[in-house]
Length: 550
Image (tube, rainbow, N blue to C red; front, side):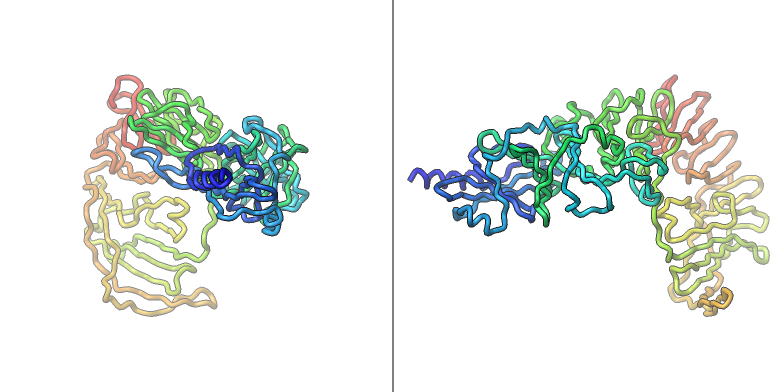
């Protein structure tokens, strides 16, 4: 009767979910079992001679509510009971590996933190690259990496499509590779014995601290344990690759407290910055935390970077080296993830499609009238198109161009993806009587128009061509012709000048600055009414270090 009562409690109490806990204590578990599935770990309680009660343990990374105003990805344990008891023979028939806790030794997760281990799997694990080493790296108690590292120079293309924490020149032979981020989990068993589990969304790896030494198990087709040996500082040079594949929201999230403050919490709900902030921006490579006194910037190692008295900070996306644009008491600068100054961001070179449309916009003068020729060609279309529009507002004596001062603009289907300068060809810069303005035109043909069909020849090759009737358009005034100059700069912004002042359309209603010069992507040095300062173009806010004009 006592045994039946115990079994009832055993099953009933464990049929539950446990949220945001890194440690799960099950002091009555006598053995664990695992197979190639990786979706669960079986837990066994001995309830008689060669009889075991079974529970099944699963883990998942779920988006759950962590406060009244916040949701975040957290690790969730799920325990399920099984109805029948099993014999050892039943367990082995299920092709499950059985580990008796008597064959394990007590360990502490903390003794592994900040250490790196070689995984001696004798070449049996699948590799992305030949001659690579499998490595287990404990970065923090809440974050570990499985890495495949090779001692080699860089594949130039591979280097240009990933983000590293600091510069690793292609020509340098060093440890390079890939990292898989994982959350370490602690399963405490009978007699103080401990097993470490590693999960991304479900269980991926298992560390068994046997009496003879640490065994590391990959929960996949081949479950043969591998030996772990400490690697010391052998792989320190691979540190720039630590975070190359991390999806940060699965490991760090912003929690808003009931008091309206913000915390950076990990997958177990722990406050990782050990303090509350007014706001926190969790980017791809940086954490930007705001207080009323200023801004703190952290890298993914959660190291607070010494960047001076930071007023504003913005992460630069899609860089080969993690880069942040900072405005501090000394000016505007770029910094890498280690807090070192960078001259410019190194943008990732993206692979593009070769079969895209090509468009050419040309400004022409025909019989005293200005026309816009809009020509479509390229491998991304089956038929070329020639469309022309009379710009009726432009007088024969006007000087016209696109916003960059040129009379031709070319782009293609990859231009937006690559971040190429878009001169807004619908907007025409018009000079009249020594003054400049902007007129906007809508280059569209009526739906019922029938183009003239023809061909265009390229040597021995020809393509169909559709030529549309010339259409007359009336423009819309964007800026009146009262400005001394108007020009789009390489930053993509339209500068307009009048009476010795300069402004940026549409951030300024009229030119207001004595001087305006881009310093970094987001910050411009300005002089206004003789006072030097900085313009933050993301917020259109001015910052001054002398007399406040904010």
